[in-house]
Length: 113
Image (cartoon, rainbow, N blue to C red; front, side, top):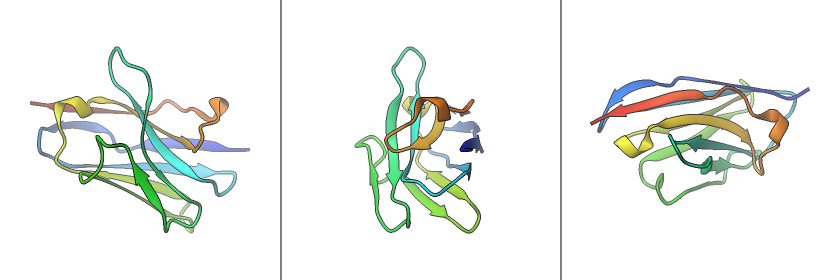
């Protein structure tokens, strides 16, 4: 049974950094981070393949966010730096492509300007 649990969100000032973690149980999958900003649809942020040697990013995340994984620890990490107010959102991890029943509660990221 697949279970995904996000953590690491919080309140940060613009220009600051946060590290989000996703604990993955039930297998090794292509994974991704997604986010839903207030009043917007959920969108893709960053993805990574099963082995962790290939990653890809939305244009909004390129150069600022880094996705990585540690399969021994069953974790997928999103390191975010130079955060902007427009990064404020609930961040979710899921497989890529996402499976609807795998969506968790997400973790709130709030960037103050």
